[in-house]
Image 1 (tube, chains in turn yellow, blue):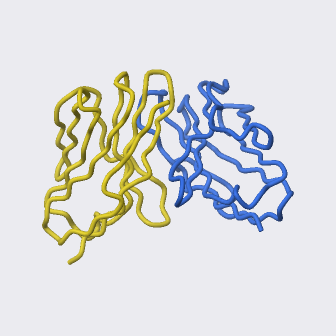
Image 2 (cartoon, one colour):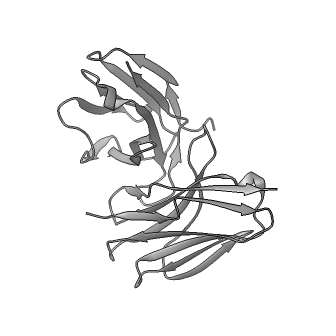
Length: 110
Length: 113
């Protein structure tokens, strides 16, 4: 059964710093990889996703996927206090549902 | 577009009572998912429908949980004989197709006392 794990569990970074979040998965046949962000008391909301090996950048956010290493990551450039939230990674095989990690709680301090 | 609508937002039930949670997916979305979220377990998959048909309910505690999607505009999750360990936020989500981004509702916080 697919296992999705995130690290670290929590992270405190100063405003303006680069933040790096990690996600590992166990099934090499996985086809869809995504990051969601959940502000306190709100619903998770998709940030960005990737299907194939490599990098994808959208604004301050970059997702990097290495299927051979069973690992993908999210990098946040110039972190802002408004980025403080729970970050969830999700992995999906063809024809199934997205399986989520337990999350990394990020706090960006001014 | 009002997004995924879930009702009620909060529900308190006594141990052993029944709870029914409602979800209205985004119009035109063919896939509907139910998850539950707790601090300890995180976001756990329960079940999903595609074009109203049940596809996978492998995450559902079989004896007391059931889900239906009688039409394309709503789905229900029913929990019989609720137990304290059922306390969680139940999230409904929908997506245009099964392999794309899912959009979550605001959730129903269920508290079993």
